Every structure is written in C-alpha cells, then in structure tokens.
Length: 186
Length: 446
Image (tube, rainbow over all chains, first blue to last red; front, side, top):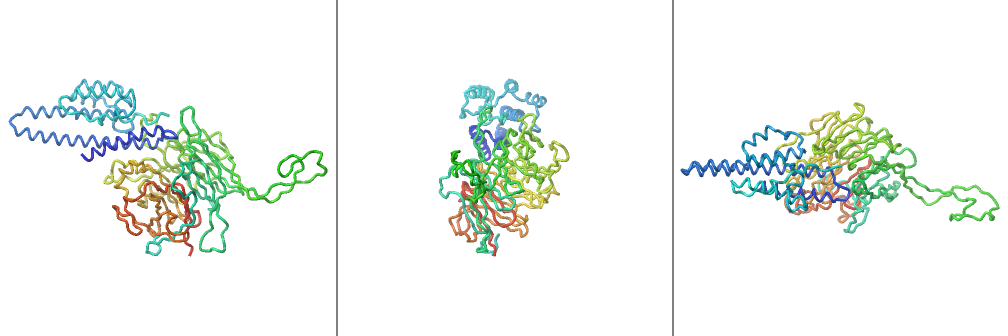
C-alpha cells in the first residue's frame, strides 16, 4: 500500500534523524525534535488508519466470500479473530498517545475507554500493556543500538505474537514504534 | 522585477565576497547578514563565530550609474566554542543573528548572538595616535632616564586607519534553550532575546539581569506542542513585540498589559487548508522569520513555501500571500529525506516597504513587488555575466526540461541555498549569502 509504505518510511527516517541529532554539535535542537515527533505522529496515525481501512476491506471481502458458502460458523470466527488485533492496535495507539503526551489534547487517560476495550480484547494482553510502564526504549526497533531495548522488545513482541496467534498474521514491527515520551530532558 | 518584459530585471551583480573554490570549510559558512541603519555598514557572521563588517566607500562622483562598493572594514572573532560541563554539551560558536544599534556617536555598536550568549560589540576607528612620549621611544622601548634632558608634550599624529572591535557587554546564562532571535527596541535602551521557549528582555547596560517576558514551557515537557521560532520588536512602539511559532501562528504582545506576556494581545493565524494537508503540514507551516515593515503597519512571515504579509489590524488572515517556490510542494518527501525541509529562510523588506525578498534553492532568490503585484526569480552566481550586467529572470518548470533561463524542478541544486538576506535601508542594494559567499546586488540607477 502506497500510503502505508510512505508512512512507514517517514517514521523510520524520523527515528533515525532523532537519534542522529543526539550526537549533533550544539546539542539536541528542540524545534527540530518537535517537528520530527509531529511528523512521526501523523505518519503513525495515517499508517494505522490506512491499515484499519484495508483490514476492514479485507474483512468485508472475506465475509462476502464465506457467506457464499454454506458454512455460517466461519464468517463469525473470521470476524472475531481479526477484530481482536485491530482493537488491540487501536488501544495500543491510544495508549501511545497517552504516553507521548505530545498530542496534548483528546488522548487523555480514560479508564472507561480502556475498560470498553478490555471487553473486546484479550484481557491478559491488555493487562500487561497497561501495567507495564512503557519506557521510550521498550519497543524500539532492533536496528537501533540499545542493549536494554532488545530484551524488552523481544519480550513485548513475544507477548503480542502469542496473543495474535488466532489470526495467524505476523505483527508489523512498526506498530510497536512508540512516540518518544520526552523529546528532551533539560 | 521583470522590468522590460524580456526576462531582464533591474538588478545587477555588484560584488561577490568570499572564497570562490568549491571546497567550503564549515567555519566559513555564512549564518547572518545585516545592514546597519544607514546602510553604510554591512555585517556578516559565520559558523566559525567570526564577524566581518564591510563599509561602503564614499559615493564616487565618477560612476553615477551605480552605488559605491563595499570593502572589508573590520574582522573579529565574536564567539568561541564553549562547553557546558553540567549538561555535557558543546555550545556552537555559530553566529545566529546580528543586530545593529542606531548610531549615537562616532562608534558603531552591534549585538551578536550564538546559541547561548549575546555580546555587544563596539566598533570604533582610530586614525591618530599620540607621539612624542618622554619616557618611551616610538617603538615602545623605554628610554634610559639619563638620556632625558628636556620635556615635551606628546601630540596626536595621523596614522593608518585602524578599526577596533571590542566587546563592551556579554549577556550570558539567561537561556536554557537555543537563542533564535534578538531585536533592539525602538527605545534604544532595551532589547529582547528569544529561545525556543522563552523570551527575555534586557537593558543594554546591564548584563547581570534580564526579565522573562514570555514563557511557553509547559509544566510537563511531554505536553510540548509548539516552540518560539522568531521574535521582533515593533519598529516604532516600544511596548509591542511579536513572536512566531512552529505551528505557523504569530502572537503580538503588549508589555504594558502585564509583566509576563504569556497572554497575547493579538493572534495572527490562518486556518489550514485541508486540501493541502500532508505528512509534512506541520513542518512547512513553521514560521522561520518574522519582520515588521518599516512603517510598522505590516508584518511579514516566512514559512517553508510562502511569504505572508499581515496587516496588524487583521488577525484572521494575511493580506498578501506570495508563493516562494510552490513547485516544491510535490517534492516534500525528498526534501524531508535530505533535511532541506528544516531549512529556515529569512526575509526582508525594501526601505519603502514596496517590495519584499527572500531566498530559495539553487541560489535563487525571489523578489516580490507588492504594488505592481509582480515577482521575479533571480540567481546569485558570478559565473554568468559580469558586474553591472542586468540579471536575467528565471522560471522553474515541472519535470526536468531545461530551456534558456528555465530550469526543471528536478535539476535544482538543493545544496545551494540562500537563507540570509538583507536590504539596504534606503537604497536598492541587497546583500544575500549563499553557502560561503556574500553577494551584493544593486538596482540599475538609470
């Protein structure tokens, strides 16, 4: 998908620019870091909404195909299994939004919202998510150098993969890209 | 502008300063250009922390068709690299801004700033020196007391002109973030300095204190959504200043309203056009420069793709919008990749506010005639044509076609850019900086 590929590329580039700016002479540039974070956020939002759209489309196609067969059970199963990771992703992105705090508006911590999602998602997975204090390095892609990140990323990926086994689809590592919690600590 | 309709402008290359070889040292890259209030002096700052001041020669009666040339008047090291041990950060010596003080006596004063420290420099001439000391020889050696038989009074004798630059004030330790602007107040006693999150007011005479007048730092840095990108005092009203933000808005503040001007008096913001929304909308809407007109009635803002003129009486939208290089709108992804999308272009007004100018890529600069509603694209190059020869105007076309004085957008050289420009306060002389050269253009006088 063109939009998702472009969004992914932009996110990856933003990350690498943010990392390389740490070693820049003169220190971290707040303005530049802020712009990169905003770009990454909008790319991530577009990426996720584009994926949601494509999955809904795919789900509708599957739905129509299986409806043509005489097996009525399968469509139900397909729907539920694909819904779970979709909601999970949505909940996760909401949580990322909470954690980043850079949005500064609608994504406030909403226990009610989480409860709603809990009903529809795998409760174990969501519990782990909400209790686990997500640090900036927790789910960094593994091409970025950080000893700590590697362990936590593997651990987090392991949790998510085990819970998405139903749909049998490997999670895109980009869905785990968090927004940096702090741009700079002065 | 497109004076005679055949692609020729009224502008001619007057001078080029700086090295002509392609190998540019990082330290030589020009980072600030500013005429003084009379236009007699032109100051440039570079990444190496140096300031070079050029002085216009006395008008030559022999060459009425052009203004006099600018020659080097003074060169000095304004800022040195420093190290902040507490934060383990190097502080660059790069000159971010130069602002001249209005002249009050024979000496000239300017403010220069790097990321953290502002300095007041006095540039004065010495063309006489005392000669005929009793205790010293002319070369400075002390005379033997026994050789003294008479007394004499030293007298001033003419000497070769010497221009001295001395730092009169150092305004330090007031900014946690990187200084992006300084602006001298019309009261000639105070000035402001702005960093990403705060604006401070200084009195020129006092270095040990400054007043914080704007603070947009959120209690929780994670909630940061915008930073200050440029700030300037009103040219006539000493209580008024503006600051532009990374979100594309400009706030006008009145210091009479309160000590801390966090509440703006006016907010100049144009609603975003949803049809042009892209991944990079936030980046390209960030204000890179804000400049009041000389009259004080208007204000100009520069963002990545446009120049906007605002009437201070109308906050809802600009009165004029000029597309600087709209052909780049479809190239934003590549410009983001090569970091050009973060370039901060300055802009400037002509002395009578009838025209405005800003830089672009490929060493192009753009002139906009507000009255005639015409614009021109000119190139800063010393390769084609000679000094005195009128510049040809350029057109940029889509794709990679190349015709005479037309260049395709894919052929533009994004490493050659004009970020810093200054317009002589009275005459039609403009100074602009390419990466390491200073170009001076003059309008043909007849």
